Each structure stands twice: as C-alpha cells, then as structure tokens.
Length: 252
Image 1: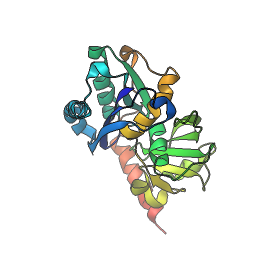
Image 2: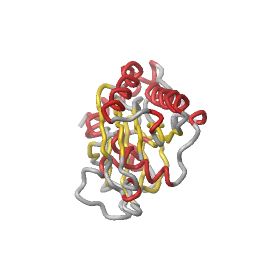
Image 3: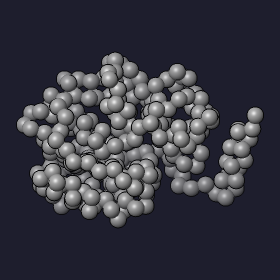
Image 4: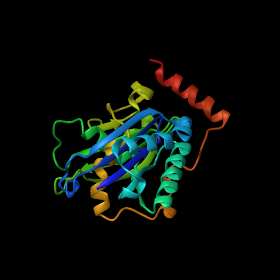
C-alpha cells in the first residue's frame, strides 16, 4: 500500500508519504515513510505542493502509484482546510486516484496515542484544537483497535466550546484524557489538562489503512472541508468583548 497524507488545518503544515510491503498495512505494520513538518497557515498555499513533490521523490513514489491521497478535512483553519482539500483534489484528479478525508480531531487523538507506552482498549480520549475567536474544537474518540490496526470510534461529535465551558460538553470530566494544541493558548482558563498533540500526517498514515478497508475513500470531486463553525471572524466589538472577558478571568 502506498499513501500520501497532508494537513494544513493549524499553524503547522504536515506532510508524509508512506509505503508498506504487500499485506503489511493490514497487519498494522508501520510504513516506510518520509515526512515533513513546518510553517503552515497562509504559507502552506505556496509550500504544500513543492513539499509533496519532494517527499514523493524521496520515497520513490509517483502519484499514479498511490492507493489514495489523505488530507485533513477539518475542523480547523478555514483557509488551511481549503488548501489541503484543493491540493488533494487536484493531485488525485490528475492521477485518477481516490481521496480519503481525515477528521483532524481523530488525527490528534492518534498523534497523542502514538507516544504512549500502551493504551487500554476502550479508553476515551478528548481531542482539542484551537478554533481561534476564543473557542475550541473538541470531540471524543474511543480507542478500539482491530486486527492489529490503529482504529477509533467516535464517542462525541465535534462541537465548539469556550475554554471555561469545556466541562459542559457531554461526557467530558475534569479527569478526562485530553490532547491537542490548546494548553499553551488558554492555560489556566482550561478546566482540564491537555497534553500536546497535533493532527500530524504521520498519524493520518497510521489510521488510513483501517479507514480505507471500511470504504471511507471517495471520488476527489466529492471532497469538501468539514468546518463545524460557520463564522469566519469576529466583529471588532466581539473581539473587544473577548479581551475584556479574558482579562476578568485572570483577575484573582
């Protein structure tokens, strides 16, 4: 199996190209891969395609050899999601390949899991990504590996919540296992401790074989970002109100 994965949903751009020996992916084996992590956000629109081309060359892969192109579909930065989706579509259409839209919060959970010595089956992990505008994307994923392959089940669909309101998300408790990129941003405003994790392309490569086996790949013409939020930016009044509330929250 040969795969290309990319994510530009956050301030980081992550790209990976992986190849498995015949049948190895179905056994949960790690791929031989080349990966890159660098500046994302607005820069990714100019650097994503050259990075993809370089990694494919290093991995000895051509687009026509890929089984699918995986991309971070969201939630995340609106511009970043559109960038990854558009590039994945363009490459897949030209090479007549399928695309695999990957939930970015799922990739966060997998990125965190990969650094743990072991994880008990059924463990619930809460994935959190900074949504800007003083909000957080949050979803719950339950670890349910099968046949040696990494796999998760959605326990709580993605919602938006203010940092102080996280415990209002159904099922999220003060002692919950949480991972994401929000701890440095919101700090003491968080009612939970959040371990560092990102929606890395390497995590997407590990998850992709099980999802492909489940038939999650689609025609590239049908690929769309998954926004969760329908509002792009705050008004000036809303930004000032958010600053005031944050200042009040810091007062003893």
